[in-house]
Image (cartoon, rainbow, N blue to C red; front, side, top):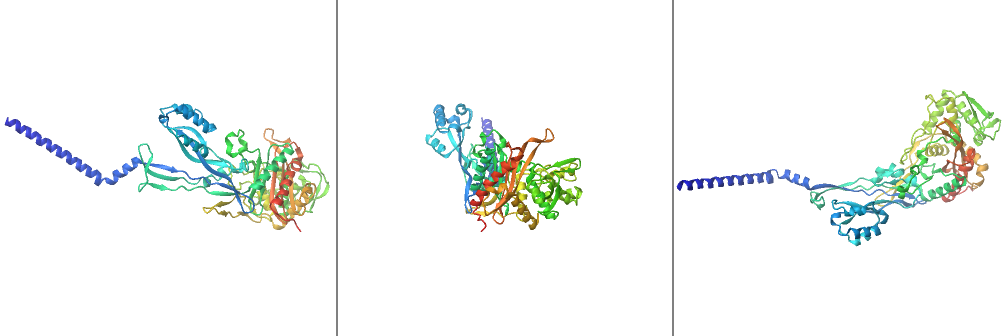
Length: 583
């Protein structure tokens, strides 16, 4: 019996020792965890229950000029709501579906009724892009299991106005086309970040010392150089002009030659950026004035004459012998009608758009022949001075550079360069053309074309953007004055009969043949009509370029298609800009 008691006591002591040891281990472990490794495990716990949340930045809004000292909104942000549900908590699917059809209507996603009944899912989207009024109505219904998520939606206040300049924002919040894409980084801003303690469902439950927040940087609010009133009139004038000659495609650009600011930029056909999903022909998204280089034809003759004037090889009254055609290598280059044979002044060569007169200038640049000197000098003017063959850098998506063949290229022979003097065999965009022409008539300063005139700061004030002088001395002031005189003399004829008296306008028509890559020849039926000119009082106050793509006018597309649109816009601008006539 005593032996049994001893054994029992021994077992009890052993058990107590084990319990004491185990307790000691727990105490030591707790001390280790809570004191020695406190910081480590606290960090691990925070990591387990901390999530990062992106704080969306508000996209920058877009304004246009509205007269001399006002601005008007073109693109704003408005609240937009997504309807979602946790089907497990939806009590009456039929009632919910009826309410959603009544309030959300066309905003409902396909198959939303089936989604409501799917109890295996915790999150389903039922409708998108609801406005605030719809959201408020839905909130009043207090439907169990259904919620609203707020975001921003782009609103294009003026419908189709300046559509290709603006572009649009897609469903993923990214800018597409126009300035929405070309200036996307600045408009989008930078998202902020919130790091917060969450519950088991990932919902933030506390904000305090362990919450780190990086504020979102909202996008830049920009003011376009576009004047909404000029843009509106140009679009109407372009539409009316195209209808007058049974054309459906055309473009117009208005630029201030004294600072490079684009006052209007329009193309037809167009679209509504707020309804971009309805567009079936994606060509409507493109801006042909910057993205569609083409052979501009005879408007380029003003560039060739400017070279000759600046080099001193011609004067307006310089004559050459015109026989109606000229031989260049194995090709014969001809004029098209209105022939003045014999000694013809350069003024008349430009007036009647003689190809032979432009080829004569090229020969003079080479000392009398189309040699390497002539080609090198001509190329140097086009690229180094006129800045063709490179993009202008305007912040609009998909700008193209055009192409000027180098004299070192195997295709850069005498015939190619003779054709280039009258606008064939090289390509440029309308934006390149108006920028170069502006420099030629403003005294010789090339301003980088600008579509943004300023930004709106936090106080709501407009901070103007300074003009960018890209090149000076493109041609001399004397050569520029003579070119203005020549183009004014040309316009003072039949084209100028409808011009307002007391002002100075000038310009040049162009009817460009369309190159057919399938045949390797120029089309005998398709032409592009153009007009490039300026207007003002004692100096050019605006430069306008018109392009008419698909008229039925043939060789008269420039004179009868594009020129009347120029006249319409020019006369209206004189009034709108309050330019006073000469006394």
